[in-house]
Length: 255
Image 1 (tube, helix red, strand yellow):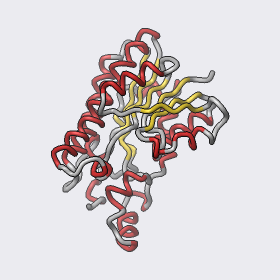
Image 2 (cartoon, helix red, strand yellow; image 1 turned 120 degrees about the horizontal axis):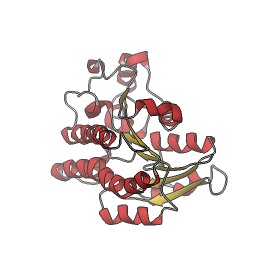
Image 3 (cartoon, rainbow, N blue to C red; image 1 turned 180 degrees about the vertical axis):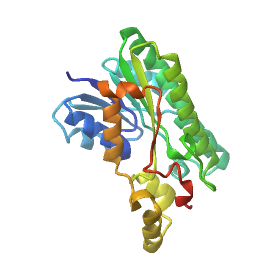
Image 4 (spheres, helix red, strand yellow; image 1 turned 30 degrees about the horizontal axis):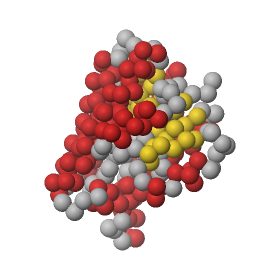
């Protein structure tokens, strides 16, 4: 049976991989984007008409969150909280360190909480639903010396939210899961870690990672797809270290 899937931040990276995986399954995907420069129409045109729909969302603005919820065709069967800022992508928005810190917490943690608070009651009333939160191995599982404090704090907040929601919803039909990806081949990881390295330094960094490679966004999407299935129920409440071992050996990644 086709489901309705909401993926925030679905215009690139892990989010776009989620969009593609669920559409492959025959589901209808609603995805969000922040700016028109992300070219959401190009993504929708990859699929059959109606398979994907794009909605603008700014998680730093409560009015934008409310507008999204009012525009959705219904309550999603699967809600994937993927949208967020990174320690480098936030630099495109503000030159001021205190504003960057505020935006990281606001968008990654508070904006996600706002959206969840508006959508979750209908899922509980319906008696079914899946909530998947995307955190990060840094903050959600472990910590890396020298990385942005506010970024890590925001990811830790997401992991906390996932555990607490799961505790509160344990006797409902709504399941909650948190995925903490490691070094994934996305524009955000490139901006935060790879782009300031030369070719030789990039090669050394990647070789030092678990399995000596970056994680593919499709691998994270496949994990999320499993969690959205009936078989995934047993992992309700889990905060999953999806880093191929970086979370248990963070010293492999040196800034």
